[in-house]
Image (cartoon, rainbow, N blue to C red; front, side, top):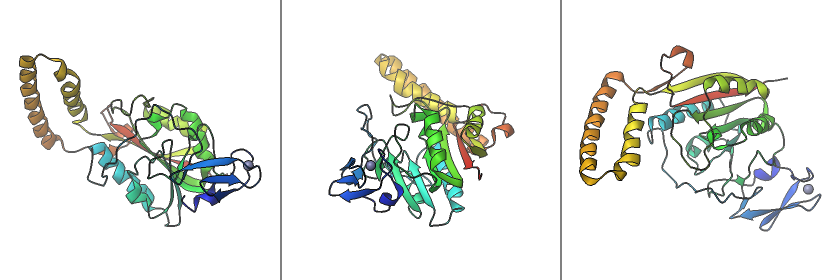
Length: 284
Ligand SMILES: [Zn+2]
């Protein structure tokens, strides 16, 4: 178990302190026990419907344009934090952003016991953390997988220190993924309003606008969802036409340029791939 964790958590039954007792955490006050799986404390049962994601190599230049934008966004937000900053990475999964987060005091949390996480907990159900002890909470491509949006945001607001930041990336036009654990897409009008309901201020909100995104999604969708069902001759014809569209799309990309993160108010496009947001907890 990550040793720093024990100072950050309290017994979920009585608020007492835990001690590490072999393969479990034991509340020194009420005797509640929390089991460790491969050294990871598990506070909430692991849902059977989760299909664990595989480990992918992530970096500033890997994955989709949206993923690359996310990397740059997170890197920029973290640059302002001191190295002793305490960070909570919620929905950390396979540690996609661990290379950016490792230089801080980071706790990686997920609802599935991936080897990369430090504790398993569904924060919408239960909270093992002491309040107001994180300088930043990171929620990268996670909020769309949470059914109880406002329970989570309220919880994360509690966990932030006054003045702390909640760093969010959330897709808008990205197709269904990690089903059936994919629940919502929000417009920026909703995302701006959410902050105020939880004692947060929406400090920055940008859409990621990629002129070719919908076209390439469309091509991918036809390839994966429609081609396999066609009779062979039609499939060959359709595949040829699609590769023609693909090469036209590549030429168009050269003329239009790459995607960029911009405030929605500055854009004519109503079709962002997703949003990148910073909420700050007010100092009261
Ligand atoms: Zn207890």
